[in-house]
Length: 208
Image (tube, rainbow, N blue to C red):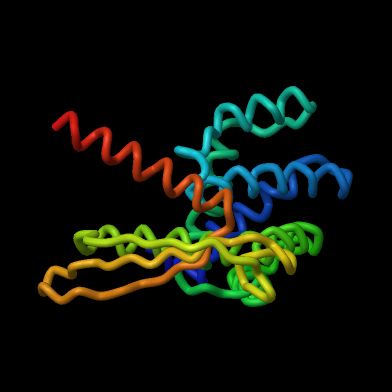
C-alpha cells in the first residue's frame, strides 16, 4: 500500500531514517552512498534496468568500508521503492516529497533530505512518465503507436533547454471497447529503452 510512503507506520519510517544515518559518519560520504542507492532505484523505476540488485549494492558498500548488513539495506531499498513509486504516481515535486517524509518522521537528517530532494527533482518526472506508459499498456490493447522527434524549449521531463525528446502517441482499446489516445514526452534514452522493451515483448509473443 503506497500510503506507507505518505505517513504509514511512523515506527518503520523512523527505523529507515536511522538506518540511513549509519551510512558513514562523515556527511559527504554518507550523502554519496545514499545517492548511489537512490540512483539504482530511480534507474529501475525509469525502466532502464530489470531490477535493483541489493547484493551488488551491499558488496560495493562493503568494498568502500561501509558496515551495513544486507537485511538493513533491503529495508532501505524497499522503503525508497515504495516512496518513489508513490511520488511518481502522484507526480509530486521534490519539495512535496521532502515534506511528506518530514511529516512521517522527525528522524530524517537534513543531508539525507537534500539528497532525496535533488535526485527526485531530476528524475521524478521521468518516473511518472514511465508509470503512465505502463499503466496505459496494462489496461488495454495497443492498436497504434506513432512518435516524432523534437527539441525541448521547456519541459518537465527534460533537464535542460534545447534537449532532444520524443513525443509518443498511443491508441489503446480499453476493456469497454472505446479507443483512447494518450501522449507521452520522453527523453531519447527513455524512448530507446521503451523500444527495446517492446521488441522483447514481441519476441516472447512469437514463442507462445
